[in-house]
Image 1 (cartoon, rainbow, N blue to C red):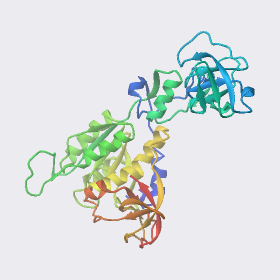
Image 2: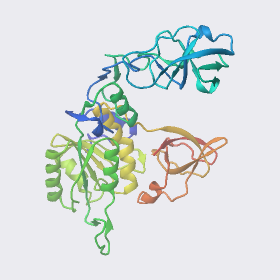
Image 3: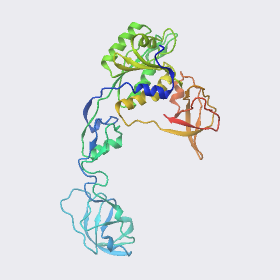
Length: 401
């Protein structure tokens, strides 16, 4: 173990994870199945957006020169609706053409009068303001045909999927979702719904980790829990390495005799580091099992969640070239005392509320790493640097959950 980096900073751990990459593959999906996926290659517009000059308002298309000295009375010469048309009436001086939002601008018109600024008569309008040229949406002002609008690695949010449609794409090339194995270890674990015997607990980490994997845009594969024996663990790891792109284990990474994930990685795997200076979550390991990347996460549910967010998620973003999801880091004033440590980045669970002076952070729950309720009810994690005070009134950085 001497050659394996031990109890290192979070920054060192993240750098080491970047020495291991992934082979990425692509597939084509339609837009209905593109949400949350990662774009495999840059995407260019097939059309201009808007495809033609159009009105941004319901109102009247006019010649700006006819409106410079309001009030002005103009004849209504035609109506243009927001639907496909092959011919448009030409506007001449002294006239106005009624127009709907999104309708193409008639030839000759160079301004819009919103309908609320018009006194409408049977065949004329009396306008009270000067025509608004900026109420015309110009062809190609949003997108230009042939120009890339989404880059490789874009995480496809709902607005980005809408942009794909606006560009004229109904199918796009995305990364194949990574298959990520989730393996929980421990004799004491039972599946929710089963009857508990003395000394047993319900296994929860796999379900929380599955949600985090989905949040990152990938596919979780939950394996049956592994009891505390090396043969069973080895067999499950071998199967997962063949079937999946990444392995996440839960439990078995500390210093005890029955922490078998650590033991088997020391003896048979390729360990890149063990233990990181974060609290909670200091025991994690990282390496490769049969050429498949593996993160060994702590068994305590808060710790496993924190390690995923702070180490696994950044590596997934790096390894896939994705541009998200990126965590939001902001500042908040401590209303409660938060216990920090001298050697670790302290990640306590806090609730966040706004005030007139800014955001305030409170610590309403006890901070045991086995208390998943404290995480479920939290809004953020503190980012207290080693040795930093967690005194009441101090403004600190927090990472929003």
